[in-house]
Every structure is written in structure tokens, then in C-alpha cells.
Length: 409
Image 1: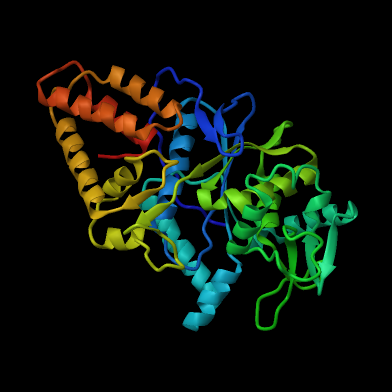
Image 2: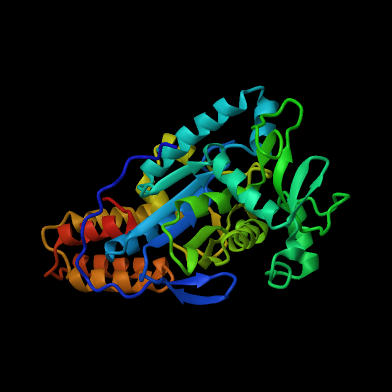
């Protein structure tokens, strides 16, 4: 699938400490290992609506990781999928009387435009579920050969209880896991399942729905096997872990990332990801921002209203990426003030020292992307510049803002 245009990353010569990220399932900071090429897999959108600010916060977070590692000289293989066939897409198309494929293409184009505006580096591989059917068939066949699958009315399931560690290592209690599983697309109550948490590998074709011919009959893949198959296909071949970092919003902690990890681990007999990194949820007026609630703030709408994309990006970086937080007009205004102040400082002929600032920004980013600390440092530099301190280079710091933070002033 076509990605969006690549961006020039200005070289920033500095000492880069090892990047440490909070790994969700391990519940601790873990250093990103650069012994092998770094494989990052970030779950993309289901294209049935425009990019909202919750999406944007996630993709900006992993853009910061991508930028840091590339600036540090690491080889990064960034993989992003797009779930271009799924129930929500079909439901939205039916509701609006629109062809599902046309709806998906329109929203994918809008997503590309939003990512370009927000200055997000494109992935190395941008892969749709539809174009990955052959890989899905291949991996399901591995499960079949290992006698880990069974059928219910033509739908093919993976038997979780027969996958080592799958039920023992759940991130929540079994009761809580079942509740979340049901809320997020699972079918724990389906009659005939061997275990309520067994995951769907292949859905038999339904009347008036798209279906693909396969060795398992006409149908379409389950959600988790899509990501596992894509990751295994496009990862660079680390012998210890399929992925260095698996990332996405915190709503993917369970079941999606957990079950993709179970499947990936059992397909190739090695851990699926070394680090699982998740971003907090963005809310509006006290509630999580979600399509089901209809309380979304769309990036494209903000841009159409004339909001500077740099301001949007700064607003979504003001808090720690792991924190749940609220979108507000006050926060956007605060971000706009920051942007105006930085631009004013950069426009001066003489600015405060910049080399120490760049090193401090790098240090803050290396510590689990401490962006609040970054903006404290930048605010201090603006104050020092306004107070008449000299010795820095506005061009040098502007290049660092671009390369490390994705901010072009």
C-alpha cells in the first residue's frame, strides 16, 4: 500500500543515551536494544472515519521514537498496518449506503494527508490486511498443522489453552479479561468454543459481505492473525524477538496486542515483541474520545479551521504519552502560545546557548519520552533568549526541533 511522502531528517551530532521505554506487560522501563535492526510495529487505523486526535497522539508518540532512533544512527524498520477490512468498516458503509472499498480508500487518503500535515515520518512498510491474505493463509496453515485450530459453523478458531503460557500470562484476571474481550470485538459467549478467550482466525463468508477464497473456504481473516502475519512477513529477522517494539493505544493492550503476541510466539517459537509500548487515551469533556461515543475531534477539521499543525502536534506532546488526558480549547491555546514564543525566540539574531539545550532534550527523550521536561527546557531557553543571553545558533536549535520533535517553525 502506498505510504505518504518521506521527510528529510536533519543530522544532529550529539551523544544519544540508550532509549528507555515503559514496557506494558513487564511494567518497567526497558532499554531499546540496537544490537540488531530495530523493528517497530504500530497498529494502524480501521479506515471507516477520519483521523481523530486520539489517533494522532499515538502516531506522534511513535514518530518521536522513530526520530530518536534514526537520529541516533540506528537502523529502523518501521511497520504499520491498516485494517482495511473489518466489521466497523462494513457497518459504516452499510449505514451510509456507500461502497465499503470506496469508503476505506477515501479515509486512507485522508489519513495520509493528516500524517503529512503533522510531520510524521512514513513507515518503511505500510501494509493493508487485504494485500496480506497470502501471509494470513500461510500462518493459519501452521496452526492447523500443529492441531491448534477447530471450527464452529465454518469459522476457524485458535485453541488458546493449547498455546503455552497464553492463559497463565494474561495481563488481567480471567474475569476482567473476559469482560474486556467481549467489549473489544471478542465472542466469549459463543456456543461451541473450547475456551471463551479462543480467538477467531478465519471468519466464514457472510451473505452480502466481501469474502476471499482460501484453503479454509471463502471468508476473511480475524483481527489478531492479520497483525501477527504482517509482522512476521516484514520484520527484519531478529533471532530473539520478531519485533523490538509493538505499539499502539492502551485500548490495544488486551486483547489485540496480547493475542497477536500469543499467535506470533506460537508460529515461530520465539517471543513476539521485546517491548510493548502503549499510549494513553485522549478524552473530551470528561469522556474517552471514541467513534462509538461520537465525541471525536478530527485532525482534518482542525486543519480546515486554520489550526497550525505544529500547534496540534505541540498540544499532543505537552503531557506524558502514557497518561490519559483531555483535549481542550485551553490546552490548544496554551500550545499556540508556546509555538508563538518559540518562533519569536528563533527569529532573533542572538539566542541563548543551544548545544546544552539539544543535549538536555535528547536526555529527556531517552527517558521514556519525557516531553513535559522537553518543553520545560525549551521554555527556559526562550526565557534566557528574551533576557538577552547569547552564544547559541537559532539554525542549530531549529534543526534539532525538526529532527527530534518533528516541529518545524
